[in-house]
Length: 164
Image (cartoon, rainbow, N blue to C red; front, side, top):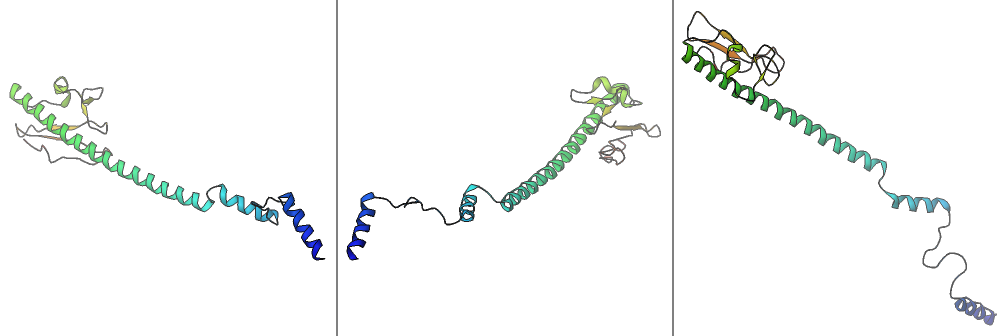
């Protein structure tokens, strides 16, 4: 019997390989184990992808919120600068004609480049609303100049040039 065992082991070593699966990469015993092993090597799980999408969504939301704040402040600063320019133009008009103009359309030809004007020649604010101008006849050196702001109803910077 001992000789039979020796003979079998010699035959196995002489062939150099076992029958069946490769010795270095043995096959799993069932197909389910094979599928789960391949699945773990394929990529990200659904939970991981959803977490990444949620983070990206939050970052995009923050970006849009912050960019809206920046645009609003930029437009407000532009309106303030344009009101200052209009006040200078109105004062130059007064020095030349000894009175303020009746309306902003009278100074349309004096506006520097970069001012948008409506069809009637009245300068428009950054929100495309016409600037409001009131020449007060009760006080010869007084006027009110302001912008209605982003929604067209709120007064923006109305205190910048009241009654000069």
